[in-house]
Image (cartoon, rainbow, N blue to C red):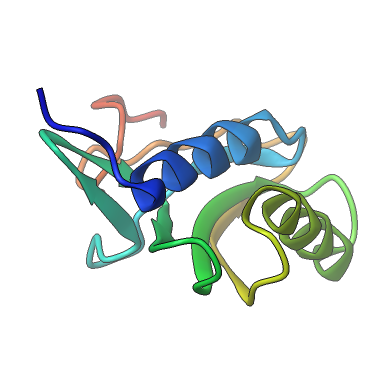
Length: 117
């Protein structure tokens, strides 16, 4: 059995917390699939985290439920609550509105394999 490193556990904890935020439609690995943490046998799409104390990058599709700076600020605070006082880079790869249901692209890394519309 492969033992997880602290960066692995950190990435998984951050991904779970970010997915729970009410404005987050989903995590996204970005157009080239580079925002990810590689784990034994899998990848955590949408979160790039190394060891404790290193900068963290997240990429998300957001529901437009408020001002963008406020939403990204909430996500930074959420990630810092898990990772500590580190730089947190938030990339918003797409935005949905309340009257526009989420579109998940099957061509994007981390997509669910369904296309809406």
